[in-house]
Length: 95
Length: 335
Image (cartoon, each protein chain N blue to C red):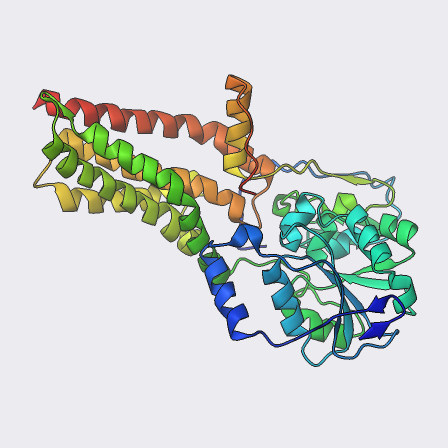
C-alpha cells in the first residue's frame, strides 16, 4: 500500500533468484503487490511494503523466498518479554 | 440437497435480521470468541458437479459475508474448521492451513461431489496454505480468489481472474473506523483496575487517606485516562495517514498531547501545576501506548517493524508513566 508506511529496512523478506522457477504464485498471493515477475523470475519491487505475512514463502514450491513472520501484536511481544524476565506464562487467549 | 457424499445443507444467501443484529454486536466485541458455524460442505443455490467450490472459514461473520456475496450463484461452499476465527488471522496461526484444507476436502468427500478438481481459496488464506502441498495431498488445485468476498461474483464471472485491485489489501477510513469499537471493548477489563487504582492512589495524602481527595483527584485522573483513550484508540485509527511520523507511538503522542491540553483545560482551576503536569504525562503516555498497540490491528505493519518500535519506545513510555504516578502521589505532600 502506497499510502501506509511503517519503518524502513526492517522486513526479513529474502529472495533467492537462483532457486526461483518463475511459477508466479508469490506474485499472485502478496496482499501488498510487492512482488513481480521479471525475466521469468520473481523480483521484490517494494521491500518496505512487506508486512511479513508469509504468503509468498508458504506458497513457494522451491523455498526460494523466505520471511520470518511473527505475531506483530505489541501486547503479545510484551508478554514474551515479561515471560523472559519473570518466567511467568504467556497468555495467548486474546488472539 | 442430496449428493454422492450424502445430504448437504443449503445456505441462505440473504442475511436474516438476526444475522445483521449479531454482526453489529460482534463489532462491539460481544460474543466474538464464540461465533462459529459448523464446518463442512454446504451448497449455495442448486450446484451441479461442475460448479465452483469456494472455501472459507467457520467464523460466522466471515461465513455470512461470503454467502451474502454468492447470492444468485450456484456453488459449493466448503467451510474449514478455523475454530471460529476469520481467514487471515486463522491463516497466520496455520488454522486455515494446508492440513485443514486437505482434511476438509477429504471429510466432505469432495472428490465424489464435484467433477472438477479446483478449490477457490480466499487470497489471504495463502499465509497458511501451501497450494502445491494441498494439490499433492488432496488432488485438488488451489486457485486463489480475491481478497474481499465482495469481489467474488466478478471473479467467478471473469473466469477466475482477479485484477490488481481485487488482490490488494486496503486500510480505508471505514475499515479503520470499524476497528475502533473492538479496540475500546478490549480495554474494558484492564480499565476497571486502572480506574480503581487511580481513585485509591489519588486519596493518598498528608492525612494518610482522604475519601474526598480520592474522589476529586481520582475523577481528574479518570478523565485524564479517558482523554488518553480517545486520543490513542479513537483518534489514531481514524486519523492514521494524516498523523506525522511513521512510528505509531509518536502518532499517539501527538494526539495525546492535544488531549492533554483538554485535561489541563478541564482542571486548571482545581489542580496545581505539578498535578496538571502529571495528568498531561499520563494522558500523552496512555495515548502513545494505545497507538503502539494499534500496530497489531493494521494490515501493513510487519512484526519486525513493531518489535523495533517497541524496543525504542516502550522504555520511554514506562518512564513517562512512572513519572506521572510519582508526581501525582507527591503533589498532596508538597502543597
